[in-house]
Image (tube, rainbow, N blue to C red; front, side, top):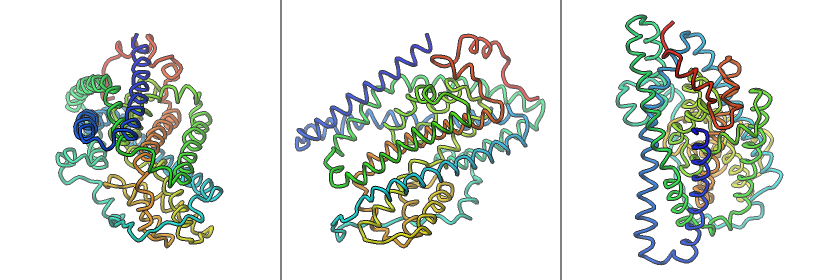
Length: 439
């Protein structure tokens, strides 16, 4: 029954997305100049519903990550194992990001978007925010005020505090058990809240997609069709190709089943354009439908949403080649290698910074001597592309989680191979098993 509900919810989300797409395009084509429609529908009803839905998702992010990560750390019972999982996660995320930007550069060089394009850039202005120093990023990972970090949604700081708190519970022995029991109960309550929000997903997705296409339309894509299609092509190659290979060879899983089970998460990511807002849905899917143990998923999913930016790296690679072609700047092989290295390291170096994608792109352009003002040329279609690259980002988080779980013996194949999610046998065992305790 539960599996059927999940499948039904996925289909409802897809229907909501298609209806929103149709409504948005119709409004943009035929009702864009009607004040009543723009005021009360686009900037009224659709904006309110979409904003409330995203806010509800974000509302759950910090408590879910904190509680789940504390439980995951205590379930490990071994600080060395935690360090091993952390190193594996960072290494895999860096590798997939490097592969992503390499694919983007290869496709962009082959197609050469923007070559011979005559664009007037006199009115195009873009002021890039200064990227933070690496030393500041490292220092800011440790929260001086954990409550403030949670209130402001500083995910790296929340992750660090949760890790330290979980380790402390583990080392506290008998007294730590009482705290752990509370977190076990709290985790179940928060997951029930996730269920509530997911039931509202079809309506929220409908409103978000409808408003996006009502305001953006398809006219913005036409002048930059070459750039747009190259980015989409590179995203598809990496999202469906690279991640399929990783899931098959390194996790030993069926890629088709993987993508089928990830479909709700991908739809959420596409509609919200936010990796952070998708954390609750992704974490639940990775655990309950892909079979990754909480001790791994509670760490890899939030960390991936913070530092894993495969889709963003693809945009940067294509944008670099596009802007170089527009300004008739020749890039050498050394420049391309510099782009790969900068984009890969910047994904961690600028983690958690507002407008991170554009800051990373500004860093990449500056590294190869291209004018940062060129970013203004692509901002028009960036909102639509952001939806697609966020989908690739969160799918990559799940794929890496499966790989690490398999390497740690924390991947339940019975759950992954089941049609919907947990099998009745698995659910019965989970319910019969005692809550996590400190060994």
